[in-house]
Length: 439
Image (cartoon, rainbow, N blue to C red; front, side):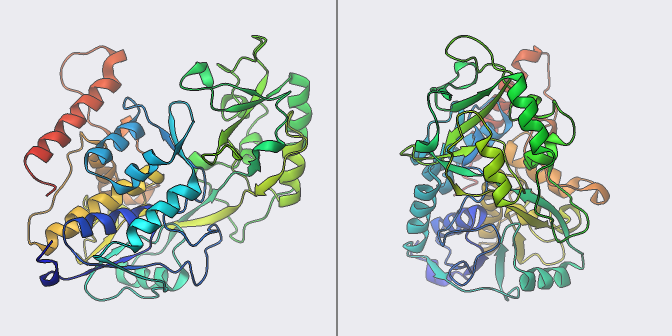
């Protein structure tokens, strides 16, 4: 890093998951970073703390199984020394086969690493216009209006958006464990979830109250909701049994008596001490009073103490296929990269991946090396390819999934397909590492 003084600095705007990862990867390669974060001045509608990489929705990074597409993406990031994944692993809480974290400890530790890095200067200030020089915009789906207005001028494109929601978090000691029971679905992993069972009669009564509960009306005329984070009350309005095949699915969650309940509400640890629990899949835009009423109708939660109510907020994102390439670099303004959910990725791990690729290619731009395009056979590459090559007329954010990967070559059993995807991808990443493409 001795030659870092001779390298131009990179401005990173936003200290969310993508911005933190990008800043760390640039600094690791000896490139000075000026990181701008506005949270000490004012928060977005969804943020609550001043810490970096705040998890505003769930505390889960989803499945950790490598046969799962998001689990494979995590495995790739770990191989590439992702700081976000390293700190997530350190601060994990029991969550079966998923990676969930103590969200406060996770954010606090990342904040310490970034604020004390000798090559990262943090500015607690709002960036209202895109500055000159090399820039990574990682302001997330809640980008401030002034900056987004300037971005629209640069791109010549109007905004796209959808509404996202977060689930309530309750005090663990307010759960009645004479009714709730501990179990992970199909007993996979440790029995880390607390489960609140419902009979058919209890579900019917609760459902009838839910579908007529009062919601907060969004300011925008049309409510466009991301399918992967659908408010549970909106899901319920699609049909009486919709929740039974979604977050309240009872299969694999038999009670200690051996009886399978009609419906189950699952609670997952939200901190390492087990004092806080979030209600799995219960993202909501019910009013606060209605949230409390509906939650307390759930067996085992009659005395639930909600410490963080669910909220809904508008997420903005760019029309990625028109604006960025597979390196997250703007086609018309190559000095600018766009990472995180603003780029059109969806999900925590996907945001980290975008920050990783943007930083690696920004570093190569500064050192005048060719771009590094990840092969589509990798999760990182499949995600980037989707963003850059989908039809702009129907582009929507999407979580990483096996449908984005090229088909496997050669004969194989269907049951082995996911493992073969992972084997192929990890092999490619390791070959790239041996070729010193990430140095």
